[in-house]
Length: 181
Image (cartoon, rainbow, N blue to C red; front, side, top):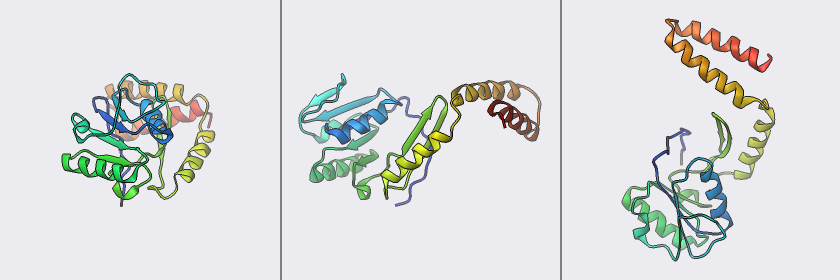
């Protein structure tokens, strides 16, 4: 499978997480950093969230879902969820089964406006996490403030009648100043 790394606005998208164990809890926490639009269906769980239904999965649970994460820990149930999702045109991530995934979860660094993701296309999530940790150590501690200042500068420069090269030169000079390079 070939994954293309793009960022998609999920502001109004509904995520359905099916499963309640530790792997489902990990996916929940990763999603929670980006959205509150998460419903959970699980036989049992320690996840604390107001939108949990405690019971077995039913295909009708997919109603209203834009994305689905199958993390039941039961391969046959997860495969059925993936099949149901495909019938309804809902992208699905089946935990630990790349062949059934329409999308995957990369290792993510999120610091203010900075978003960096690292993926091995499912070959080694542990290696992706290791690379993520190394990248995090390289980032300046004030990266969020730097990016806010650059965002404001970008807005101001857009209002001026400058060429792309002139704007790029100003951005580069400002970044070098802010990052001490």
